[in-house]
Structure formats: C-alpha cells, structure tokens
Length: 49
Image (cartoon, rainbow, N blue to C red; front, side, top):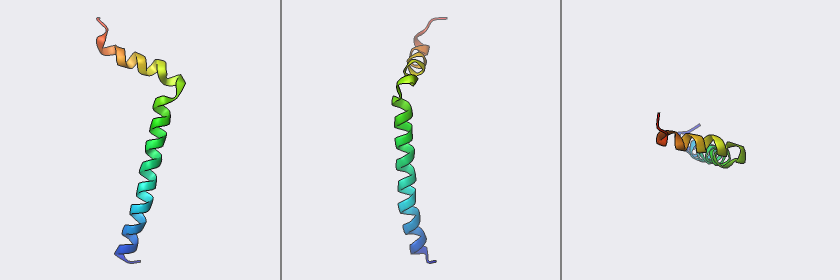
C-alpha cells in the first residue's frame, strides 16, 4: 500500500465521516424534543439570581 493510496482512502472516508457527524449534529440540534432544553440554556445567562 503506497502513501498515495492511504492518502486517497483517508480523504474520501474522512470526508464521509465528517459529513455524517455534521448531519447527526444538525438532526440533534433541530429535533423538536430538544427545543425546551436549548431554550432554557439560551435564557440561563439572562436570569437574575
């Protein structure tokens, strides 16, 4: 296995892995049941103690 083959393999599968992680993160961020959790987290700095 040459360096060029390893580089091509890592480029293609690395891109696929990063894209799938991005899609998973977007699905998690926009999932309807997470809305209340993210709204609470967004308002936390504005709350007075």
